[in-house]
Image (cartoon, rainbow, N blue to C red; front, side):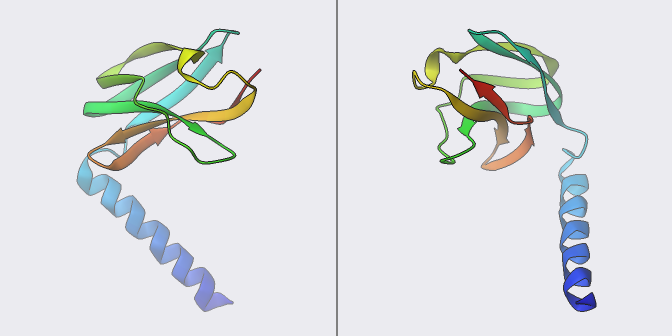
Length: 109
């Protein structure tokens, strides 16, 4: 049991070291609210050309990028690109094939 926990701890430490080395450890994508038509997010320290996309929490399906951003700012993203039925989603910030941030899961009705 202890060796299993030690392995998990070492893996988590390796991920943190990779984030620090890549310079994206302080990058963030934060859900700030939503209406019936859109979701609002705030992003901080995202690398250049970071693509923001919806991810279906249940199926894991990705949308096409809904925005391309860099640095810090806010976005209001319409739900128009999502299927016309309710679901559980989160937004993912992806740069050069790897993710650099994601929001909490939210519901679309």
